[in-house]
Length: 193
Image 1 (spheres, rainbow, N blue to C red):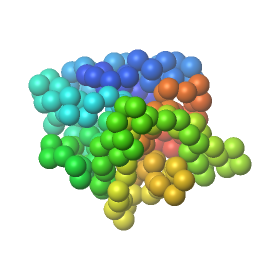
Image 2 (image 1 turned 45 degrees about the vertical axis):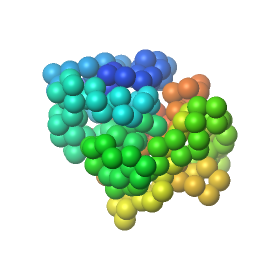
Image 3 (image 1 turned 60 degrees about the vertical axis):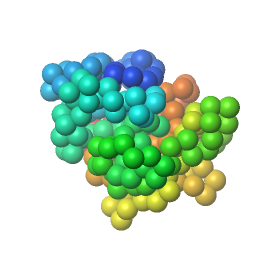
Image 4 (image 1 turned 180 degrees about the horizontal axis):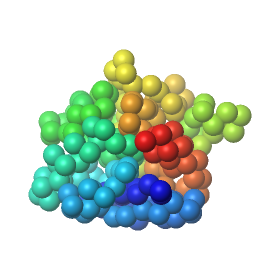
């Protein structure tokens, strides 16, 4: 039976993640309520603005439901999605889902004007290990816990991690034409449930 991939659609670039999944022949559903989440086997948490993201999760009474879902089921968080999953945000005091043992700095590379595109190295992609990383007001991973494995790098910095059922990245793979990260999430996380 085909897995149902939910894309959290309270804020951010959720439509582009759905487009990416369509491109690789995987159907998805938008998740705007806790009820929507009940039908999903996995969840993608898109980029956006992390403070707004968390406020909307709370306003829509979804914070606890998303946390409970993400404790056991496959989740991919990109940019703001990574911040929302992180245990510690060094330059802010808001309450995150605290499910990923990392410390992050919001806007770690600077403001909107400092956004950039550059090669990210993803060793699991073997000899074609370069991926075009789109960094838009991207967070910076400051430190990772012992159960967190780095799986993507920009220069010497960790920009993509996995931990149990969670894959998280500081950049936006949905803003490229390259489906490899979405495929990796499906193969390594979703297909194994």
